Length: 202
Image (tube, rainbow, N blue to C red; front, side):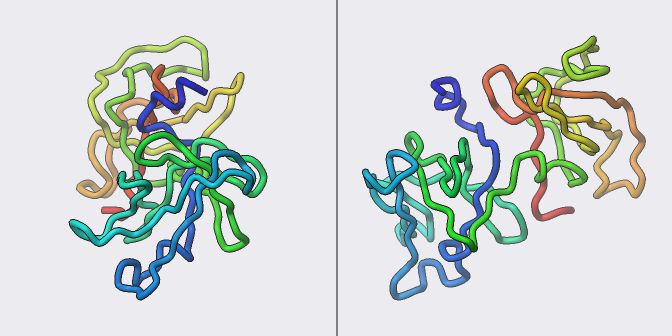
């Protein structure tokens, strides 16, 4: 777990909390809060995640801004690093903490965000394109590239994506050419995500 804590960008999914990410947010008389606990139980509360008006409307915990990821048009979510039943361990400004998921909350797995979505490689990709997960590979230029992820698979506990590397962004070309296809690791050796989606589309 220590490697996960060191990987700033690592997440296994995104937690959508509709009661917290409301349209009013900071404008509400009593802005919503999310309780944070030290373990997946209510035995030891660490504090509350709150909306802060200083410098705009931001999400903070103990004075530090909480990292968020967009899952749709103007829809944000917490980065989840672990789940246990109705509990999710999320990234805070410093470290992690556990939140309870109500019936209206849900966690979107990393792979569900990526497969069949507008996506691109991140700087964490090492340029390796595998014929099969864990098999032989060839090395390509590891600069950020537009891709289509067609499949996800777990092999030996590792998450892999089957990708088509595109010549251009689908936003600029109606049917971009597929320059290469194969499998890539979903995370780098440092547990940073190798593919990210574009929640707002083109």
